[in-house]
Image (cartoon, rainbow, N blue to C red):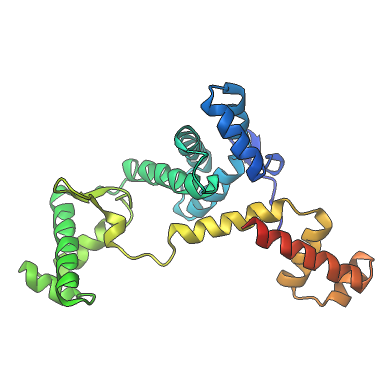
Length: 256
């Protein structure tokens, strides 16, 4: 429930400011008018958003300072390209931009290099998969894909597995002059970016709560204590706990 103090790129992340959505929209409008001070304020006010995304890549053994800096590049691109007139929250637009920038960095700096022939085989397999799915209205098996390609099943599996990490989900797979097919269009992912956005939106909503409200929600939903137990621990009445808990949950719902 609480953000730990972490030093990234010389920045104490526990002291990062958080902008409200109205403040972001106002800053973005000023940025469109050429206000550089507003641009810097917008960048500083969304560094916690970058940190939230970077935390998703901590299990890769990469230097967090490097990922944070790369994520900031994605943030700046999002700020420079976001249209404040669209009925979309900035984080909904910004998170995929930050993710994409980090994934491109990881792909370009990955020590495991996939051969061109292996990638070509994988792309062929994904195109055959789409063709069979459209033809039979069901997800084709690896056996069916391999048979259509006249290729050993093991080679197809190896080719598809080889591109899971090194290739960005936003990398084009095929284009015939019409709509471009991207890797993300071909590969299913239960942990898709929308889940990340929802989780980050929840974190942003919680940050705006008071310390007492955070404490109550932490004890109630993470520790599992009753309202009476929470009341005894923090020294207020059970009725006050109930009122604060209800108010905090309502504010979180409105925020996300």
